[in-house]
Amino acid sequence: MAERPVVLIVGGGYVGLYTALRLQKRLSHGRAEVVIVDPQPHMTYQPFLPEAAAGSVEPRHVVVPLRRTLPRCRVVTGAVTGVDHATKRARIAPIEGQPYELTYDVLVMAAGSIARTLPIPGLAEHGIGFKNVGEAIYLRNHVLARLDAASSTDDPEVRRRALTFTFVGGGYAGVEAFAELEDMARYAITHYYPRLSTADMRWVLVEAMGRILPEVDLDMAAWTVRELTARGMDVRLNTRLESVSEGCVVKLSDGDEFASDTLVWTAGTKPNPMLKETDLPVDERGRVVCEATLQVRGLPDAWSAGDLAAVPDLTKETEGATTAPNAQHAVRQAKRLADNIVAVLGGQEPVPYKHAYAGSVASLGLHKGVAQVYGVKLKGWPAWFMHRTYHVSRVPTFNRKARVVADWTLAAVFRREVISLGQLQDPRREFVEAANTGRTGSLPPPSAADKAQSGSMRAS
Image 1 (cartoon, rainbow, N blue to C red):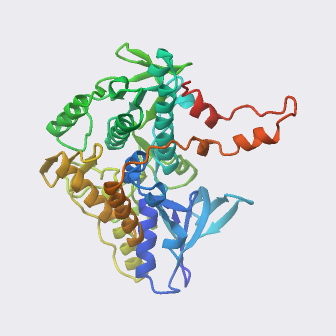
Image 2 (image 1 turned 180 degrees about the vertical axis):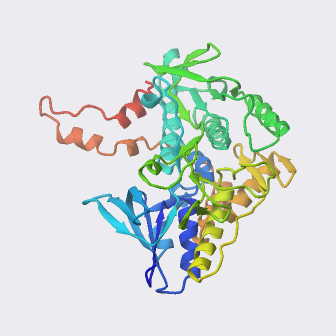
Image 3 (image 1 turned 45 degrees about the horizontal axis):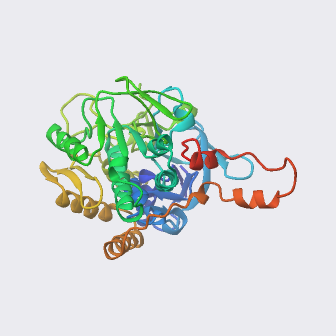
């Protein structure tokens, strides 16, 4: 290994950021060069995305800028398109310029996951995910734009389609987004849309399994279904999305069909497909095979953790059990991974990762929640308060903690902001039209974002 080894971290999510933070702190200046590569110049704290979509948290405050947070690391904004660990070379595609190869000594594979989709007709054309801040902002603007469209028309079909919101996937991400956005829309209609009633809205959650929230006990999941149903929301268990046709007509496996301007897909994740462009060992689910020390099996100078890693769960007696792909494990694994790299660089043995799952917390809207932590079950306001307390303690850097708390404080004092900034979807549209005024045949066709904002996912 080189005198000043290069540690390459692929991905700037939970594992990538927390590993780099720990290495930056633990490694003395000049002992190693840490390079972190990600297509985005920031890490997204995903548990706050539902609150960002609902307007409880400023979207900029749920992302952590990599360059500001990692001043002693080299941050490359681009994508790792392949890794040849046998020769310790990675192919880098920067956001601009020619691709190049980077030679490293130690690899940390932390590329995370992408949305797990199915070959459902119409899904790619009409659906949207909920994994990044851009999607959260889009959904906030889109839901509020649907309220504007419904309030501005007397056409019952247009109004019905605009006020029907469909979410597919009953895990934590889906349930929280579903509940938070409904809570925001309910507030908006009550205070600012006299021509609409909350009874006009239809919120449908589609889940293929016989329950939601698999991370909590069945009684807590059942209570959550009852809570959502009491708010007039439609929870369809043992039901699948079969197709989405032109006009955004959603067809479900139970035979129901209805028009819906909004289709949100939150039905799970899968490991980043770029793993196929590496020579790292993967299991049948496409995850990197790891030892309990977080080293890639058979490769002592390659490490991995988080969503795309199959890490043995030493807290369970079941043979072959691996840790769950959630933020709780990712953050703790990242810290152990960084400490193990420092130990190995110092000639010491790495320590196995072992952490018993503490439980889960979820927000179901303002002052509403569900939680199960170390066997203690909470509902309503106590669970919502625990959700906020836990996640503000986990979001990286004091700067972001303070900003999130400030957002909550201001939201408690003033009314919610319920303004749709639809122009963000296609900010150049109006200027291009103005520039082309009077030029026959020169107006550009509407962009996909423009169509989605005002038409397909369309309403008026």
